[in-house]
Length: 225
Image (cartoon, rainbow, N blue to C red; front, side, top):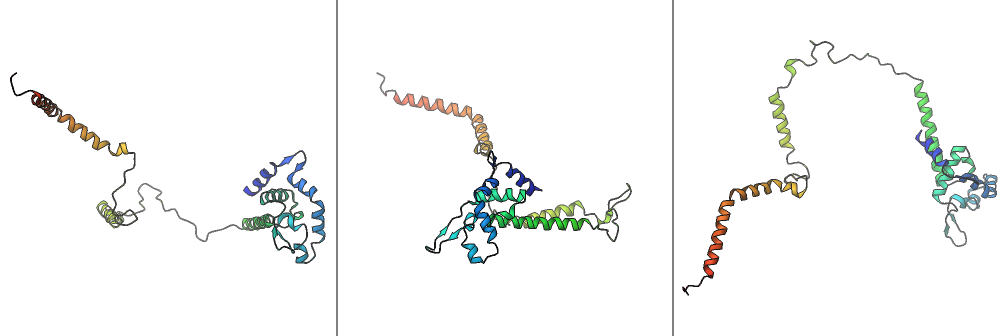
């Protein structure tokens, strides 16, 4: 379903007054496509040297031995192949990487649809009917009282499991990292420092006055005149 919607959406994007991208391609390369269709029963060597092979595939020159790029880029080939698959003209396009890829996808899509249709013809019937496990009445209990795990054993098992995994992992032995900003990280330490300074404020003021008095006395001359 998604593949079909993608094809239809892409086909509506490239339609102008001169027709779609596929129509312009068919008109401009009509002679090349006709010659390639008439010589489809020839050998592989003659097919590789035909001019239609240069539309979607790279060609190698017999004289120089160099490879020439295809006439249409992979992006344009993808547009042409999508429109051709939507309009049923995929067989009219020459061979290329995008053509073979979409043919493979269409083949897999047809196989999956056939498998779904074949599976829809059968209905699964279980051999034994399922019985509900949950209690249907208030007095029924799915677990007997003697089978329940005491809370103390549960807590002990959980603590033992935590001790086992304590030193396991890439962050074993490291201090727990603080999640937050630097202000949040130093908030408690800063609050404690402020409280300590407020508590010792009287002694701090007294020491400051004493230091100021001592500094003034040092500046006074020793003689009375």
